[in-house]
Image 1 (cartoon, each protein chain N blue to C red):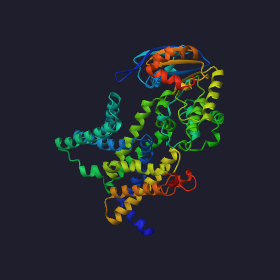
Image 2: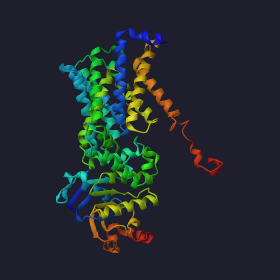
Image 3: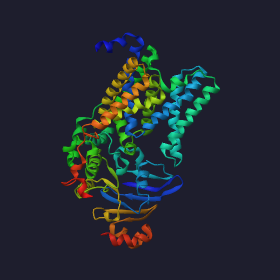
Length: 243
Length: 290
């Protein structure tokens, strides 16, 4: 169970997240949706303690999440990564094992097997010696998916994982999501566009600074809720998306 | 030919400067690689100039000037981080201001304290003036920085590649940052005497960025960078010896020469040698698509 209570974030005097509370049971894929600038990324960063929060508490399995970060896999937005960084596919995935590897040691045999399995799972093992800059956008996203898998986390936070991704990768990401869900993990996924509000998700959090709706697809994606979140743009949005 | 190379080594000052430039080539390539991958090359320049107030104060108080330089250089990075975190001022402008502010303060202090610090050698260095004590200090700094990097290599890799990710997984990012900045500051202080603060940034980022165009992993970049840096240093000193030109400038120009070679001729990324983009266009080439 992930519980978020009264979480609030101010960013240099501007309200980014306003008193958001919710709780999530294991084995769910949860979409965080809302307009641009609604504080979706800020919300997951605040959950992880990556940005200062004004107030609020985040607990996972009844203990403060900040004390069990090894249980959390976080995949940042594409734009936050320098794709020209001199690093290979395999070593990006191996980073997930850092908490399991001693300072003076090379990664264990077990870690290597886990990383190999993760890369094979997303179809990237053959390309393990490539520099990440030599990959397509979809392949790059799959490397990060492999990193998340190799971490063997309980809680997964993805910030816009579908941006710049091909259909094949999108399908593969949802496949992995489904598998993680059946293993009882919790997945929080920030969506970029409303059209991603597909049937793959079990639950949605619709936010615009504050939490507007929280529930199943039919409970959350209603004209009233969307009007409240998106304002007047909602007519345009609903007409152009296959909701 | 052999004689040309060996003759200068009969002088002790030449031997000292050769040893020190090899050490600096290694030290600067390793620490400078971290500046490069964080897109913080200018930070090297900032720290190099920001050591001056510390030098002046330490000199006045009669304490070790290297300690003064270290504290002053570290302090400048804290000021930059503080400005960044407390306002919307971006890092490049913060660095530019802190850079000139600290340098100006240093110049002022040198005058006010009637210090006998030689500004010219601070700015441009004098590698032929190094002593055996300088060699030992540089050796110890290089050794400790290499040990630090070896132990924390995967932490530093994670931190510089994906800072938020490193923080999210619970790595002590503030300590990692502090360690990294300390290592860079130490490298700069060690290089100050050899090439001077104006040129130190070239030794820090030049060999690393040259290697960056040739390899695909950070540790390879450090290794190849260390070879390029040391080789440039040695070549520069020979040039300086035989053509009677300033050693710091000679070293920097050799570094720059290597970079230009890689920029044009790197097998994978060289401007003249990389696989041609024209292949992406259908037969007939780019022009037909206009």
